[in-house]
Every structure is written in structure tokens, then in C-alpha cells.
Image (tube, rainbow, N blue to C red; front, side, top):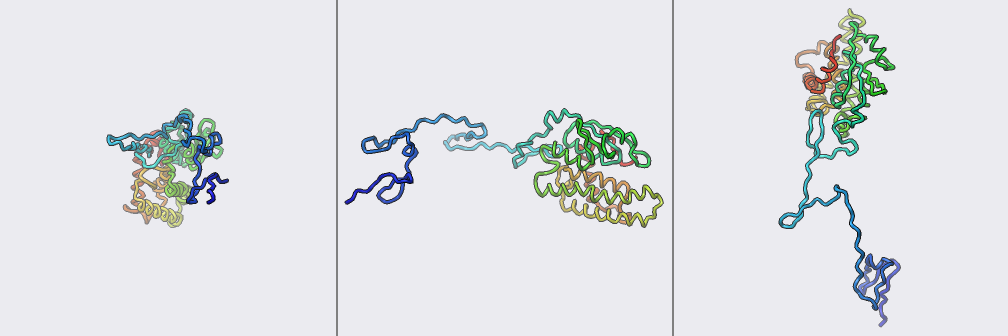
Length: 328
């Protein structure tokens, strides 16, 4: 009977009588190790000890043995998340790139100056600066009786458009409340609570941020300028110009009702509130909506939301620092 060949095959495996391949061990494949043969001991040589590996603390085994000897894992408490003006536990990990509640030291040391015009969108920027805990100075200007901005504002603010608000961060000059808001969020909203990371909440926040100007304020300015330039304009004409405002407020009231939260997007202040707040205050203060639609319960959810934002510490701090008013 022919003796079976047990030599190693090309693929590194050996054969045993039942035909199943067996892959050689690491020691057998190591060319530095002598091959096993009948003239040498069948005991596999012991591998050389490996040097210890120093693992970072985050990768070390944190398990501790119990009295029965069964290892248990120590559960770390959830991280604390900064929401609005308070801290709360979060069940999800925060981004590691920007995970501080306060601006970094170089940011805090930058000089921030807000050129603030009364009865203007300037309150949006003061409010968001308060929400971001940024230190800033205010140079406030009162409007003329005609509601025009004073010449001194246009001469001193440094903005190329001569419109309020203007924000200076060191030598950087920022204009347009929407653009300033976006810049401040991108640079300083380290925990993303003014513009949430959640896709649905982020999309909703952006909708309100842009609707505040492109829809609500645009529709409100038409009857406002008619009243301002043509004081004796007939009521029928004013009502015609204010139809869109009524539809806008109806939509906003329904949105707030369906959300069921204190603020537009959630129970915490977002850029949706800081942008939309002034637009709605302006419309209601100057009665730019259709008069026949106004009654005690009309747009009740909108009025309740306004009361909520006006009670916020960040908003109140902004009003106290700037003297914000809707009337000249």
C-alpha cells in the first residue's frame, strides 16, 4: 500500500487522512522557526513574549469583577447638554469637534460692537448674542419722528449699506440680520442649539428664519409704507394690501398649534424665534394685518408664543441692554 504524502501544499495547508485541510499555525508559517520533522521534538516552540501595549484610557477595559467573579461594566452617566439657558442630560453623544458651552478664550476676547437702531431688526442680533453668551458693546440710535434712521447711524456704523443692524467683530463688518445670524451660528453655536443638527428640526428652523424676512416682513412693509407716505390712504386700499398678512398669520398660528411646543421648533429657543419674533411684533404693533380679522382670540397661538419669547431671559437681557422699543 502506497504511503500517503503529508507534505505541505502550495497554499500553506497540510492534509490529514480524512482529506480536510489544516492551516499551519503562525509558528509553522514563520520562516524563522524550524520546520517540524521526525528528528525534532513535536512540541511547538513557544513564541517570544510581546511587548506590553499602552492603551489610551478611552480604550482600557473598565470592567470590575464582582464578588462572584463575573465581570461587570461600569456605566458612565450621559453627557450634559446646554439647551437655551439651562443644562439637561442628553442620551446622544455631542459632536466632539465643538463640545463646549462657552466660546473659546480667543473668541471671548474679541471686541464685538453692535450698532443698534431702535424699532429695527437690530433686536434679533442682540438677542442671539445673549443666547450665545457673547460679550458685546452696544451703540444705540433713536429713529427720527418720521421713522427714518438718523444720519449719525449711517456715518458711524461702517456698513456699506447704511442699514441696521451692523455688527463689528474686531475689523470684520457684518450687515443684514439674516446674514449676521447665520455667521454667528456657524462660528459660535458650539452645541448647535440655535440651529439643531436633527435634519427635521434644522429644516424647520431654516424655514422660519427665511420666512421671517422673505414672507412676513415683505408683506408687512407694503401697508406700513403706504400708511407712512400716504397718511390719508383709504381703508379699503390698506385692507387690500394687508390680505397676505392675514394669511401669513393664519399659517403661523396653525404651525404653532400643531407643534405644541413653547417655541417655534421645540421647547428651547432657536434661530427661528430670534428671527421671526421681531417680524410678528412689528406686524401686530402697527396693525398691518386686516382689521376685520382681529378679535380677542384671533391668532391666539401666535400671541402666546410671543409672550413666551418676551419672557425669555436672553430676550429680556437684550432689551435691557439696548433699550429696544417698537416706537420712535
